[in-house]
Image: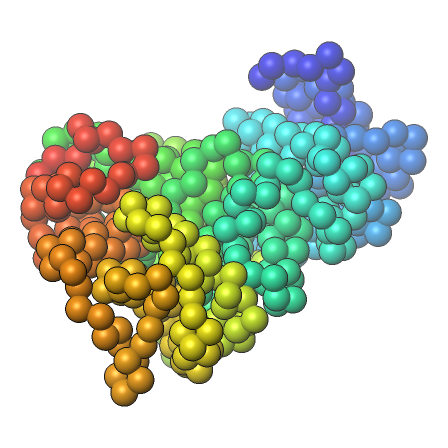
Length: 476
């Protein structure tokens, strides 16, 4: 690690002298300043005397629980990030620690490589918080769970993509800022089309992991027989057609965030394997005998009622509790109609920029008709309506045909209209599949070669795309 002029200060709390010494020596070799305590009382004395960049505490101590210390630090609005060490396989304790405000947790026996990585992340998070434009006191307040009065400047871009001045959206943004700083798994709930992936990207963008990868996967878009290879990777020859080692999604998201969209569609067998990876923080690629440590934050999303799925036996209860440590609910569009004008302006601006057209103005009649719609498809439905209006409209205003609520203008150029429709569909499916052309082609019933041709003809930009990374026979 690159040492700063003033090394980060770490407090270790463990009642076992051998372990305490092992942790201390490990961190001293990394260049940290380290203090060590054998119980809560001694730890509190250290904390009264100085501030630390991170606190690593065993869960069970001779004079109480490490969770008591977490609550003390939160009530004092201290900025230290806490890492809790729990007994092996104690899933309930790990979840309880995260809910109590722990930055992260480790299970015994502690893997020292993972230990170093978690401490480095905690230190980075604390230092970023201390340097935040919020100011130290306000930043600590946000870290401790209070409503943050403002947000870091570098988080503005991702948060501002969540368009709308309504109070309910302000609450969503505030919660994002509050939860971004920990490693606790986040479950985003909301109907289809509400913008759950935007929330996931905002959680990532507001965190200390923002410079690392954000990897999104639609769990319902991957064929069941390829799920394990897609998630965990595969060694050459592990399955038919596997001609080289393949990185899985967990490895691709190293240091960053893995977004599991439509987690409720994951088959039960894969749920069990995912649970093990989350608990052990290791993956074993197909065809490998070695476990590989992983460092990712899990953010998942669903439009389904997972609690009902648990009752019905279609979703594992233990995985549900692991994923649902922190919940963010994305409201339906009908719950925030006051955001409609701002949403329309933002969507029209983007649609017209992509199409190379001037942005039209919405007529008052159009806005009235929009407000009267049920919007079962939410923001995605609104976007489709505006796409259709842009493709069909010739006037500066957009108009509905009252009987069918469709647009009455005949397109001046049929080919341009058809291209716009095809482009809209392709972009939508590519976004849903994380811009994986193979998965998008499978969803649309096309070959990889066919979708490549259409992407090139319609000049659709693929973010961070390396054309050599995919082949015609690549599994989705």
